[in-house]
Image (cartoon, rainbow, N blue to C red):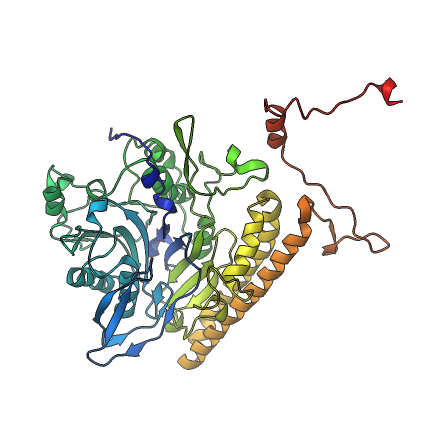
Length: 551
């Protein structure tokens, strides 16, 4: 049995609550219903504003320099020579249907890099310079080798329409600007994922298929630092370079386990790993029992462990309205015992999330679709952003509001307007949100399905205009509709009541006055907790007078 001491520490167990603590799910082409590569990303941060980055393709004269700005802090790290030609990027995807996402796991803090390229710059510079996943791997490792790595441990998803890779990378500390890394191609019929914990354990050292590559010193460097002393074939990248504790497993591998559990029936055997750190590690990938769709991946991004032993709607923290959200910090102490809130895929502090759908046998303009959402994935609507877009729609564009500036025409703010009301009375409000969200997404998906055939017959320039207009139209429709939804929720649930409705309108009496609302109250567990409370139960008992005294 592979067991280690199961502990919580305030710093490590809160890894998932730090800046850009993210979730990435993967379905390789052979594991999807339409043969597309599907990858997801939730950029979770308490300081990240949800907006869609865009940079147009361009030619650059020799000698042009590109600024390198740290994504987390906005700090200028330096400049590097610009490529002669850069590709159009839209969010975490480029015009060739290449997508790159990440999740931070930190690892051994003494290995934090001192180079020029942070993990965010590594993604966006590479999207400007690479057309395929394999090209991206070469660009990323070359950038780090040349200019040094400026971040901590990171998992990257690198995907194109034909294949998807996971690369894990960590710096070598302040005295060595380089990095050590390993990359593995996800088998075509498998799903995978990473969520703030290193997921690559043992790997083939002589993979003749070319599906595993790694830095030449990935093992020798670990030996030199005292992180590993066994045989090369027993080397685990994760064991050597990551930090193991209860937060890294339950809060991080737990999210990937929930994804696996949705699509495979034998995942209970890994619960001891997630909850206790015992047994075999969660596999890097598994073969699902059904083929996945983009809609499946969107729904997975809305997961709160429902139907599992970690279901966030069931414990006392969910309150009277079965709220699957917990405010930070994730860990807390009661009588010197440390406890944790669950850390699910869907979380309130998401800046933006996406499902990248990458297909090879479709019109070039639709080779990549970034189903893009802002704020909480559970309550957003995913809008299609095409790889051919010439600009980001206004409602998602950089500069339309920020984390301190509320704008009613910004998708981020209207989604928050809806979500933050539901956090208080979730079980009552979520049906109203679903009634708007799901039909809207279904309509969009049906339109996109017809666009594949329509665009194939169009002149390329006409096709690009059509897809730009489609993304812009739905961005505005969504933003307008969600502002209306937020206003509706505010009125319907005002003051703890629930207004009655009739024929699609709030109910009125025959004289036009508002009808008396329903008093939703609380659930049975809430009332029982008061009755059994030693400080309040007796005090709040209602005095019932005998019948004679009532007369």
